[in-house]
Amino acid sequence: MLPLDPIDGVSSLSRLLRSAPGAEVRAELDRVEVLLGVGRDPAAAVLEGGPLVAAALGFGRGALALREGALDAAVLHLEGAVAAFDRGGAAEARDLARCEAALARLRRDVRSACASAIEELDAIAAAGDPGRRAAVVALHYRGTAERLLGDAAAAQRTLLSALRRSEPFLGERAQILNSLGTLYVTLGAHGAAEALLEHAAELHRRRGDSVGEAIACGQLGAAALGLGALERARAPLQRQEWLCARLGDAFGRARALTFLSELALELGRADDALALATSAREIAEHAAPPLRTWVAYASRAIGRARRDLGDPGAAAALDEAGALFRALGLPLGEALAAWDRASTEALAEPADWFSAAWSLGSLGLSSRVAQLLRERLEIEEAVPLPEKGGPTSDGEARERALAAAAQTSPHVAMQREVELVYDRPDHLAAIAARRTAAQRNLGRLAALTLARPGLIVAAIAASPLGGRGRALPPERAMAVCVADLPGLTVWIWPAAATPATIGNDLVVLRATLGGPLRAALAFAPAGRVLCPPFAGDTGAELDAVELVGLMALPAMLAPGELRLDPQLGWDGDARASVEALGFVVTNNPCHPG
Image (cartoon, rainbow, N blue to C red; front, side, top):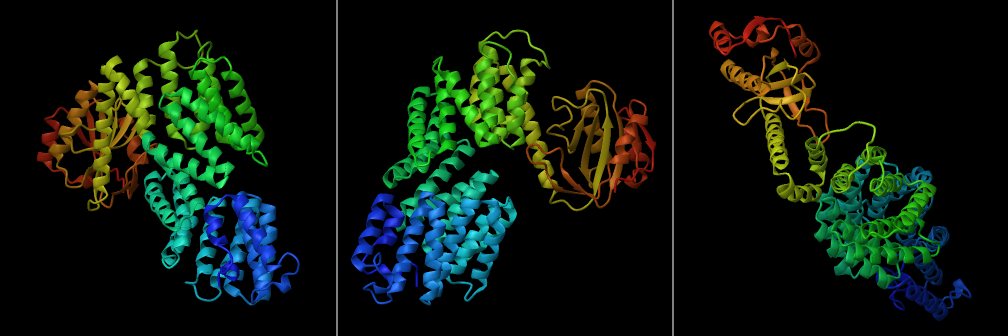
């Protein structure tokens, strides 16, 4: 028995909870109570199994309160329904109500409720058939608890397990897809999130579940924004706003309108952004209780739109947002407010861009840092700045920094490249060449994960190393760069690389640097590349390669000297072929693996 089955013959409450405004759901609950006399005397309800009717209505009120965020009321009604179903011997309905009560406590008490919720949900999942609906819901909500605890890996495992078991229960499957998509948005896996949430939104539409579809659409918009697909984000966010307006969901509407205002700002439509953000703030302020988080974010969007429109009231709106973020203890909001303040102040005086960028970077938001760097460049190009202290850099270096940061934000990179085509084509060409060399190096590292064990490793020293991608091997080379430091780089080759190949690669590097280099070569017979670096990583993940001793050797060598590990097995002809390239070859027992 499902929790609403006892009133299924006289009410469409199950459908209304998925698709109707809260006022309509409350009216239906009141109508059924009057019709069945449950409000006067639950034991005298006219349907057979009268106490179960009272339990079903209590469950309905709890489900509505949970949907609306009235979490104290939700816990009260749902726990009452649990007790009533238990007295009536309806085990499946009782366990489903227990799951919803656990979810309400999780949302109300967050981390403090996680341990007890997981214990209860595990008990529900372990009782009876593991394929029953209550067991699937319990597993789903356990994943939610693990996400709230910050254990993303455990949450993913649990939610995927719940998804595998949810095939017979279409509604639960759609909800689990929502949760998985939300988890992946949080983790920055926006491609996976988008795929799951598109499926979730379609399932919700087929079931007439407007509440679930609105959630899916909101996260789908966030995933598209994370991918830099600004135009693609618009449709799901507009759909969320429309659905939430029909449902009377102030939270969802305020969220959607705020996201839409930010999208309009990114697309350069400040007037549209101002109208959308103003609507969002009004909805958030008039909610009961007020949605202070969305008041803050909407106020920030209003301030940014006014700034872009040249409105002197921009600073007041931005100050209001910053104060709200501080009061709410939201680190992301505080970092964004610092960014806003920096961009506003930079129009007239030196600005503290670093504090804002550091806060955003520390939150893992490299795409936001890229946007900040782009905004800083545009302001400095448009407005002559007063003399300021701190580090300075030339325009080309700033362009390289922006291009590197924008690797995780394609739309920022694309916008800047369009500008550089006309304004600084030489900078664009240098960035494109650097990016191509880096991608080639990344591709070779990824290919080496498939190679048999065995690597030739070289620690190379030369004063020009450590900047502008000079250590990245060219197209015709066989070498791969795994470390690049000021004055020192580390190259590797597959074990099959010949002495002539290695010597020629080093000659090309010597020519690039414009002077002699010093190198120590060693053989790692079991050496492997396990994983190339992710964006922002400091180097490839290597196995059975010891670099500490090898990297210390070049400092002791003479310019042009090439020190060989005897394990390389180079014979006299091999050594002579390398010496013919202008190197002084010597021996040394250095073993990197």
